[in-house]
Each structure stands twice: as C-alpha cells, then as structure tokens.
Image (cartoon, rainbow, N blue to C red; front, top):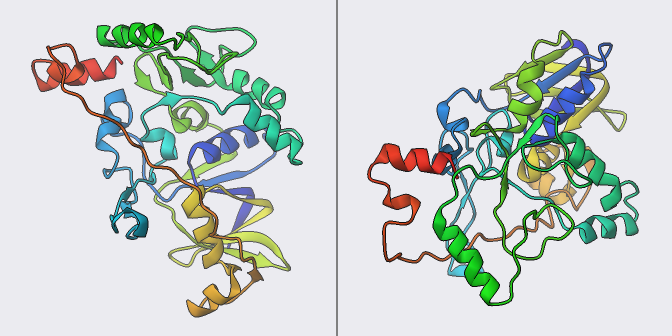
Length: 321
C-alpha cells in the first residue's frame, strides 16, 4: 500500500487535467494523476490534421459498439481516448459551448451554480482567445482558442448561399447568439492543437506536489465504510488518498470502474462474480449518445482541401483550417 497523496485523480482526460492543475496550485496538497494511456509526444497529437488518424489509432481504446438492432445490427467504431489529454488530444478541436438555456435549465432543476451566468466566467477564464476579448471571451488563459488560419473560398460561398436562404451569418458562435452560419472556433494556439494536457498539465509538470503517472490503469476503487479511500491498480498495487479519490474516466470508463468496484446494479454485478459494495441500479444505465451524420458532395473544380496536389500539400492545408 502506497500513501503520500491527498488527492488521486483517475483519468487524465479533459476534466482530470484541469483538476490536476487547479488542485496543485495549493503547494500543501499532494496530487496524483493516473492515466491509463501514454504520452502525447507523437506529432499526430500536435498537428491539427492529425485527428484524422485518431478515430481508431494510437490514442484510442479501439472499442466498438454491440450490434445495433434498430440499425440493421450494424457495429460502429466507438472512439474513446487512451492518452494523456483524453478526448481533447484526439478530437477535431472544435471549440463550442452548450446553449445558454441548457445551463439555465440545469440550475432550475436544482444544480446550483450551473446557470449560464455562473459558468460563463469560467469559460472566459480558461480561454486564450486570439480574436475576442469581451463579456463572452477571455485572453491570457491556459486554453488556446483560435479562428481558422486559412479558410477555403468555398466556405464563403457556402455562407453566401445560406444568407440567400435567410440564414444569417454569425461571427461568433460562442457569443450572444448561436443561430446562423459561422466558422467554428478551434482549440488551437499558433496552428497547433491545444489539448487539456498541453494547456493544463504540461506547463505545470515542474510542480513538486504534482505526480503524473502514464500507462497506469486502475482496476478498482478501494471502499472503506462507504467511502472511497484509494485505488487498486491492475498489477495489484494499492494507492491511498487522505482527502479524495476523484473519478474522471469518461462516460464509459467511469461507470465501468464503479461496477468493477462493486458499485452498480446488484444483480448484474453478482452475475459477473463481483462482490456488491453498494447497489446502485443507475450506474451504467441511461447513456444518451448521438450519431455523426454528414453528406459528401463532389465539387466541380479544384477548390477543396482534397484537391491539393500532393500529400504534403493536403496536410499543410488541413493544419491551417
């Protein structure tokens, strides 16, 4: 059993990286961040166009769905990140926020502190926006937010066509209104990805009270008297936390780890031979997800990214959009 930590954070994704950085601002707090995946040193993690290689690539668990009975039993690739930075290290870097009404609805349902006015100041604090600095945006924060560097002319043609149909142009989709057509803002800084790891962990790795362990997969939580007091790793090593164990392993990883720890629907756990610590039928249920559907059209001329003359040209163009 290894002691010496106040906080153990399970999962070095977007949330885990932010928590590690913020908690370690207190020099008296000893923080351990555990990430099952590896480092983000490969160039694909830094070049914006690298995300095209990530769907089933080096930073993914490689999971698939079960056959979907309402979709002719098709099996779909289900990309979940396995790398420091989590989804922010392999996604398409699109920076968008929820609609203001969604946050206000949460507050109305009892989530005090989660109204739009409450969370907006944290959005602004996090940003290092290369264009906007106003009531909706901030500059100087850890997370790079940029406009596309070299948008293609066909994009402007699309906006003009939308305007002709009565759909207005919106210069800031994360501003006062979200209606209309626009360029996405991107989690990039100086034409490089700005993941949660790059923004929050890498600049703070020098902190003596912050320990980051990669390729460190947790097997289960250690629960004593109804409280999580530590974790057990795959190799059997046990680590304890004097203050809190924080579970931030994603929409799939978190309920999976809870069930492996005996927290979940008792009948399901018993059938799998897992000792029941706490019967919680909702753990692992009620996931709401969505499909990503898009249309592909052939263009009449060499006006798109794929028309670049060679592979290097296409990569350069992709890195600047």
